[in-house]
Image (cartoon, rainbow, N blue to C red; front, side, top):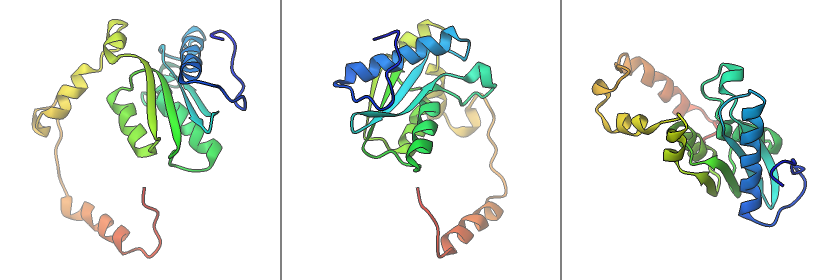
Length: 168
């Protein structure tokens, strides 16, 4: 099963089967030069609705992590920007960026293979990001400066005043 792609419309029986598909995508993406060794699938009602492997280096897009690619694929395939009722399977514990995207997409659950410290062993160490989030903004590695708050808030006021808007 690890070397053969599972058709998108073939229902599977277990979390392990879907996770193995995510791991297969990680291996395939890595071997084909698309990016790092990460894969993800999104499943709804026993059917794979989104797939992704890491494509950071092949697309020059630092946000093209497997989970984000799979979320984009699932949302496109389902015609929605929210994935309630879906499970996201990832070959590795999601990084902070992916976890943020996952929370915005709102799947019902996450199942992952390797821990983030396993990825660190392979050279993908995101531990410093967790530490950065705990620091005051002005002490982070990348300086942050707030400006023009009143002007920026006018756009929020305009949004609030709109009769028709889609919250997410």
